Image 1 (cartoon, rainbow, N blue to C red):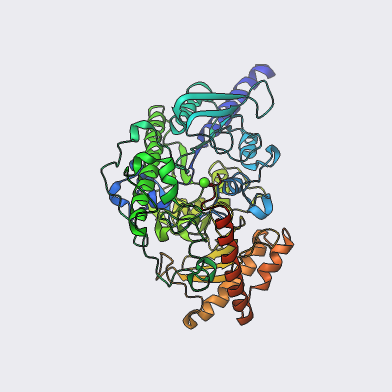
Image 2: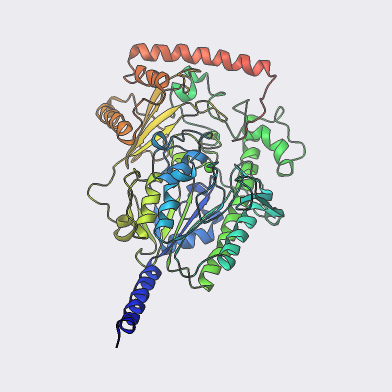
Length: 559
Ligand code: CA
């Protein structure tokens, strides 16, 4: 035998070995909806439990692990997505708000998957503005549209000029069709895949596919206990104003509490078919408008959720048929939470759990036991490290988040696992009237600091702190910041928050004028409290003058 014939079996064995090694790596399917909150996922739901809103997603939970304490670091679309694609907190990746973007060379997650031999694809809502750095992409421009959905695709012209439109289709159907088309015609069976499948639904203003118009039509949707009456123990001067004088101006509402933006007013124009023909905000009682607006808001929202869930069934059926279901790590999440009428709030943004918490379910029968739950604190910056870990790809030093694969597989947290999540919302009083805030969330407590200023330290709302004992008060209705029994917890958490900010890279250097306000009211002594009252009066006067000059409601800003 000569040398070359000897080499043949060696090369063959090597290629088989390499081929098999590649085959053994699991596929990664990352599914994210927009504003799909845990309260509207069957595996988490309480108020909406009996409506069985997500039977398909619940099968993932029954066959995988459900995370009770998954949090975003900034409850709004673009920043949350930026955290996941980079593994970095907003202060490090530079995406503080909706204006931010992640350029192709900073899209660490798909780059690493591709370099490791994975086939990568991004289909659906992207919202990071710059061209996706995936082998294949088909993404909505910005927020995208619910109907006649247009996608940006690869093509002969420069990003973002190549487009295709799915005429007459709802976006959830169009996105699922696009993903199925990728599987059928574009997937390379010789490579494992990393696929992001991301819905626009159920982002507001909710528009469902026509086939869901009768879904829940004759059902009275259960109401959250605080829809009409928020206990006086909830909130602070930051969220209510001095002696409740800012109740109308902080946080947009379901009912007509907030005259600038509420579903009570918006629904009449957006979804008149959901309201009685004689619906008149001016004539109806506060309670009646809230009830009607809540029912319409939830019907529309849950119809969008239903469209997501049914489309996921189509996708999972395909994966089963093709033998891909069990060798794929399937992750389901929403980019942040959403208020479903609790405390009469709508939208997201707040550091309270309904918006800060993300639904998170991970299914991989190869190593995760079905029907398990974990209360480990995980953040969206940890998601990319987890996905890389499942693929055996080392986490780069640029990623601040860590893999929690061990939690998925054993239910146990590593000894040095994080004990708290960090939160910061920067878009002071934009769109939905939420003040600038930062927070620390542990398994048992949440401390929120509403410093109440914009990037330049201007447009101040009253600063205040809130502390919630989640072991006794999981709905965050009893602010115990000034309760002497919590003095020690309060001081410890303040110190932890100060340390955590610096640890994650929010060191005050990004917006010095804002940081000056943050520092000024940090100790919150008597002088600060008096100043907060003055700011409350001043803000009330400004708001009322501005509403008066616009003769009522300003047109809602899109987000
Ligand atoms: Ca969102």
